[in-house]
Image 1 (cartoon, rainbow over the protein chains, first blue to last red):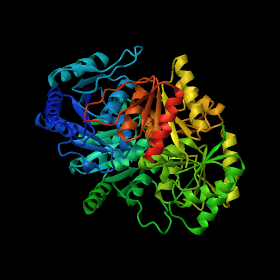
Image 2 (image 1 turned 45 degrees about the vertical axis):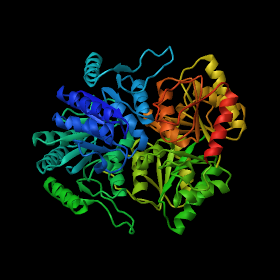
Image 3 (image 1 turned 180 degrees about the vertical axis):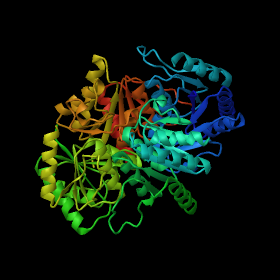
Image 4 (image 1 turned 90 degrees about the vertical axis):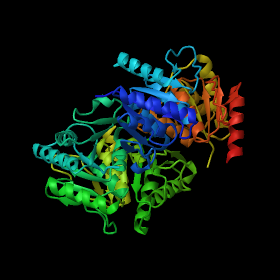
Length: 159
Length: 159
Length: 159
Length: 159
């Protein structure tokens, strides 16, 4: 089975974040990874567009009841009907998570992924100061390419 | 976006049910539909195999935490970590549901789909006796081909 | 810990069903059971009122995001935000389920409870015809008192 | 309906955190609030014990399938069977959240609560550095009493 990389971030985002998300999406797709995202607008839409340009596959895990409410670049959409609880579904489905920018919803996805032991790479995203006894934390990347590289490296080490 | 048809049934099944599920899976795929299923064994695995033979796409919506626990014929797997509550995710994602045989888990998927207004076709499956004031109910099919036909017809009327 | 009995049924119901639900709620409360329900109107509200009259406790497991959207007789409300997937939470929390009347949502709760091995008693509710290889099924009761009796008996045998 | 205050924190915790959680639980109960927690060990158990000493009510929203797996101080337990997705149920049910210490699971609860607009008070907990455009954030408290005070004040302003 392919490697699943979640790309998470805000449903509204800056132009800079959209460019980064698009590059991350394209980068994951070019390496043969399946992109998982929340299926909405902002970072999710930009990442989905990048996947599409690279000819890859992007799954949208939607919070609502309607599979046609996702962004137009999704390959496939799953309607969870779970509201914010769908963030846990994204974390569970992903082998690694790349966070681009992001607000509190994104922070919850980062935290849920770290909780269940998935690698998380941040790109212009939250900076965490975990208590000293927590050895796992987010890893920073300075570019879309570095984020993709680190995600694949960490997944290959973990699988 | 493609039409999403869920194929639901028991995680163990008779040989006859497996043959039917395989034909239903292949039939949906040949018509260009995306198959959604619970991703497990039994009817789910047989349906997934049928989709694969027809060169189609099948999404597994798994109850557990591990995307690699699905059957080997899945195109893509989503790990919900929700246990039985993932049955609601299948009902919400599907445009129509085809039930092949099935036990109580399948009955819950039939009921959830009917609750939210999705067409449900039964093939050697549960026979419901709804109270008189309920106008919607399951529709029976006598063959895999008829089940697929009815599903696509009902979806095209509803969309 | 107390025994938890779910009372499930439609969000709209007949006068006869409301009377039965009220008696079931009161009966469970008088026996010291905690009533669990979906927290809404119809059978849920009538059962909650019955619990209140008997001085018992009733938990509402709501589908929405707002704990103040439950009926006015609830002792405590939990907002799941899960939509129909909350039906699985009711089945998991209950030691036994009593269904009064009910439509497809109720049928899904009956099916989920039977799937996970919880006793289900029906009072003027769905009549199931399970396939021959399924040994567990719903048990019918003819009165509210009989339904409560059977629920407590089955729970005490199972615990 | 009463005010619902979630007390969140790690399933293992330091002695200092346990003392704080116990005082927070007792403080909320004395003010007539209902305590909501994850129902487990560590901070959850200490908070539940504090509620019990003060004669209050504490609801445990459990991740698993068994309502009898919660800590022994719970007044009532709801088994969600949702795994980590139950963290969203806690955030939705609460009018305000008090975090005592905590690891990544706690961080996810903080983030989910802030995402949906609930006040969050931190006591020896995570320190967040949200991006400049986010106006809402966690509020720090230096003592259990201050945390309880702030939670009730923020809820009374918001309701």
